[in-house]
Image 1 (cartoon, rainbow, N blue to C red):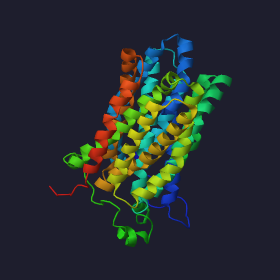
Image 2 (image 1 turned 60 degrees about the vertical axis):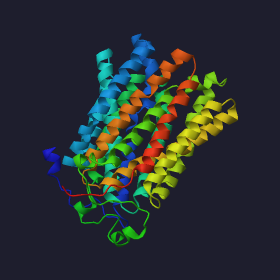
Image 3 (image 1 turned 45 degrees about the vertical axis):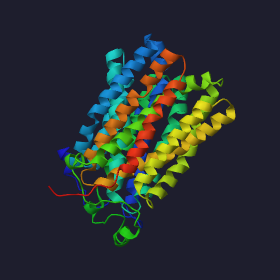
Length: 425
């Protein structure tokens, strides 16, 4: 890291006629895309191959994955602290390299210990770090257009979630799962790692620019609805505010609810009298609808108080769960997939923008690192209560009704999460 940090970061690597921050947004989108090897929608394609080759039970592989995800979530705050210390350029380069090594590792697994470590590294470096880093990088470059920039960055996530499952399925069936992991490792090494190192700069000030571009700062505060706090709170200072804990709860709820439903969506849909095709259609429709809605979310958070948009997403969660409870036909599945997509498209941006808007940019890595840890832990815990309730009641209606409590409470806390007033201690 000392060698990397000594290299010149005082000028842009290329001269552009437009604000260089948009180049940073493009690299951030690439980072979110290449988090794919560590995402559930990608890893799930390998699960049955592991079960078949190693003769492990479904519950054993799922248990390894859940524990590995929990451990990765608990350690993710360290990535945030390292980001504050070394900057996003170094961290993206190093994490990209580590994820490539992780892919190579997964191509050689021969037993449960290697499998567990493979899951752990995929979740820490992929799903955790390569989504955390771009979400701390983009707010450093944008102020008035922060929502728009994060919406564009989110394209990487939508493309990743749409591409990885079918591509992994094809590669696994034609070349084998070990070769598939090797391919992703090579692509990370030859595409993402050099691009991140060459083109990422931590802040516009590092290369003699101002946030939003040379002339944008004069008009940054022209909209009275933009809740941007350029006073930077430390993690310790932020933790002393009610808003921090309220928002932290709000961050964990979508991860818990969405992962729980997604993990069991096929079983839920089959109990409704529909098939696997309808379940797959719901997931695809969610991504398709969610993509344009992320831009709507960016528009809203640039113009309205972020707490209201956040509360709106939880109202959407309640509505989508009620749709799922009543689902009984293909048309119902389409409506549910569309509503679920709207909710996910809205929340993807608002959950990223609320932290810099409330607590500033300087210590964003530490703050977002803790938030990302809560999100990963929530995603690990989500499927468990669904499985338990199915064993107890032979269905999912009871847990779906119970789980409405979480977005209901989160929506109330979002409305109570006023931007805290900074008091120097």
